[in-house]
Image (tube, helix red, strand yellow):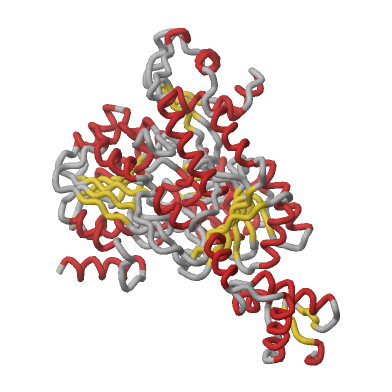
Length: 639
């Protein structure tokens, strides 16, 4: 009976006929009331495991704790498009938005509540949650709760307080990457009850070929790789400057590319991501700011030009390739300097304690906090101005804030730029007599036409889109929205980009600021081990790359994957043919294909000797025996 109900919900709201591997097991465990840990690699369908049971309960609320506001927004928009009611509560919302959200919760008009972990620090907020009929607590990105995880966030430790508010409610913890030590720590920190269950999907992705390539000129090699492959791609780098440089280089070279990083405006990020999602842009050059919530199935290639600091991050980012199950490639470009660069960055992540104390003192001065003040305050903080004023490097300050956060002094909340929101606050009949200007009425009509749901909740809007639809310039649109806001026809919350500091304890004298051994030396050792595991993956070609990752994540190694670069070299050594023999084979194959072939088809046909096949094809073209038109190659006698 339960299985049939779950399948009906899956079909009704998501259009799927059946669950992916492990999804049903996790859902049935949660529905039975068991605390559950789900280890599901990127693209495994984590959200289904809590959204389906959230709808399967006859009544009540599912609380989802997640660290990224942008991810909350994406998931809520996705749920609302499916006709499912959801709200969120986070530090980026104003008083009116928060009040509307609580009213919807109190009236039972939401099935899902998304919250940021920082909210759980507030005892009053926990008391409010106590009154809600909660049926399930979900902890997304659960590795953040573990001090041994690669992205530990002290605010996650407050989630255990939510368990005390609703002690009988099952907890579902989800993460894409966790070593055995981290998995055990997650269950301990979340106070899993006896009888808890853990479900782990294999970290092996058979359709992805993991390749490491030595490179002296990474930009040229990125162009070479993209020229030899087809389909959508992501190129990851570790600096904003590089995203722009590589994107411009590829564009000039005839490959459609755009860049993406956290410093772009919300509109720019949204438009670029949408163009990439629609395949109008082939390649996205991005920092790790690009990826969370990305659900594009047909990414054929992910290239890392720079090293991620851990195998966890590399696995997550590379795993955005091939979610449709078709052949895809994850390529890591390696230069002789990368090893020392990665180790140097690790050292920079742990600045001297005196520097950390000095940055703490300056930040408190900027926030105008006296000794003993600031407890539980949330204060706007201009990060870029702070760095500029005190001539500090951005990464140095971020590293200091991260360690101060783990020591319990403050949390730096680097909000992504929120888009503008609007909610109409009058009845439909009153819209016919607004008394507003013709321009404001024109903008209002566009809002009603483009954005459903304006009468019941805040809806995210895009001023440039309204500008295009109405033919008005953006400043005129902005002023029209302000006019409608003044006339109390709607509530308009303009977009903003505001970082915050959450002061978690009253200001201390800097000399008494303690960064303990467990935070500094112990975590340095843990991160060093991660860095060395990443270096070993890249530079050690003695055995299968996939098996190396499986071992790292605590999974039993299987037979060699057969398609990583190490396995391919091994296969090639036993399947070697001469250049003359390959030239003859390619010639014969093209004679049988008078309509022509693409380079990709030819390489696939002659794997594992695809590089020799490509060289043979290039020889035939260069010597005039074959011609190329629109990436189709034919022997000259057939043209």
